[in-house]
Amino acid sequence: MKEKTLKNLRSEIDALDNKIQLLIASRADLAAQVAQVKKESNTQDAFYRPEREAQVLSRVIERNQSLLKDKDVALIFREIMSACLAVEQPLKVAFLGPEGTFTQEAALKHFGHGVSTLDCGTIDEIFHQVETDNVHYGVVPIENSSNGVIGISLDMLYSHDLNICGEVEIAVAHHLMMQDQSQEINIIYAHQQAFDQCHRWLSNHYPHTELRPVASNALAARMVKDEPNAAAIASKAALNLYGLQRVAKNIEDRAGNVTRFIAIGKDEIPPGIEDKTSLLVVTKHEPGALFDLLEPFKSRKINMLQLARHP
Image: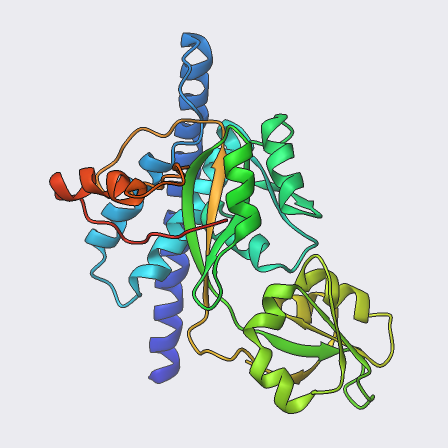
């Protein structure tokens, strides 16, 4: 009886899978029609509309009465939208590479796997790729819960005429890895931010080992793949991608370490209901300058989530 019931349940699942696939195909057809209408009408509407995606995902979560978690349902629909958008117009997104970085994870979480990606060696290069139209968008880190704002990203926002088009948060867990964990560790590679976030752990476990900063944690992982007696601090994704062995996991000093990333582009995003506005302001170096800047927010009862000073 149990075997028959299991068979029946699997048949129902197969039937639902067929319906889901047909519905996704219909959605892709509609996306193609949207692209055709935009082309024929010569409309200037951007193919990627983050405020529209936010509305869709918000409704998806509101409707969710299933056993699935809201974030999982939202992830499924994010990927459907990403694949359908690729039918309209494939997006190209730049991230801080190489493969296996938290920035790549943030880019795919925000845009979905339907986009094509370009890995860049520096944050400066990401801004350059967007500004010269080699990619539609770029994703860069802007703030970490342990280290605060990312200064180079603020500098680039100030010096480039680009807009913030979205944001995404990634939980950051650092792992120590190498090609053969039985070897002695003579040098550890990582991004400077990772060294800062793992300072106490490293001081306790490897107080005399050389720490050498590199452009990204994923680059560190790629380097130690072929270097004996060398270790890297990187993500679980980098660990698996480069076939390394884990020496220690979750070595960050503070639990709940989160990095906030922003998507940058040339498009001006129409205001939405749940938008967050970020302002980059330069004030005069004189008494009362900060008060003059903040007083209009108080008088208009506008709450601020954060105020950060950058030299």
